[in-house]
Image 1 (tube, rainbow, N blue to C red):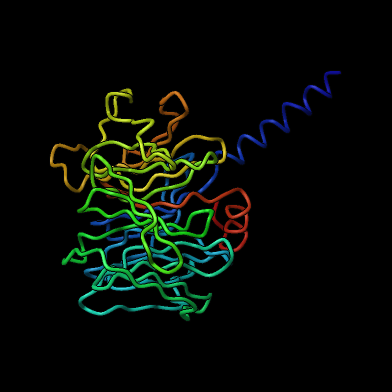
Image 2: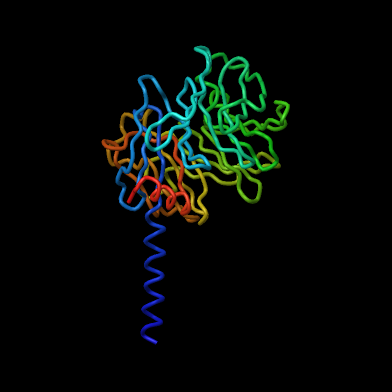
Length: 305
């Protein structure tokens, strides 16, 4: 009996330790690096320097274990040896602020400009589909950040200066609009179809009913113990149902080194994990949480701890 109990405790200990060792890719406007952070320790396992003038507001891991990121004037894929796999450039009158991995394969690039563009590219960076649309916003930097493809294959575009999220179909036509309390940075789709949206300098994140457009939930600083929300940038939902929130401090002079740049909250808005290290990590507006399989593959390929 004692041996069985010991075995159970050992298996539980190993499983818990493995889960805590997950890695997170982080980046942000004003940050000079893309970093790989160990979630348990907060240590920096890997750092990729950005070139002068590059601004990264979206980052992800590709299916083959490389890093894809936007840098305002283009998008790149690099491996963890810093070799460039491919580089996609835009013109001086455009900004490429959004990259994401498509579930059916390839990547989605969002280009701010006149007109704005959505490009689907393959694993080699070759354009396979192009959608153009006009936001009637002159300055590219005021248009959008992270565009996502929804489950119905439409596109969710967070229009910052208009304070709204618009949904586009495959022809680039607007089929719905959601008015918001602040300029949205990104969005993600809940299982019930509703949308969760970070609202930037409105210092909140909101859940919006996909059908009615009404706000059904709002999380602000008042709902979080000992955390001030600054510019709420990328958010995502983890497999355990918790929310991961990036708290970008670039517009807030009052933010201290102890201000959480990234934190995880449960369904009751309890903070269950946070990262607070401005001096070493820098500002965070974008992140990608590696799953267990991705973390294990990375450890084997590059001898990360």
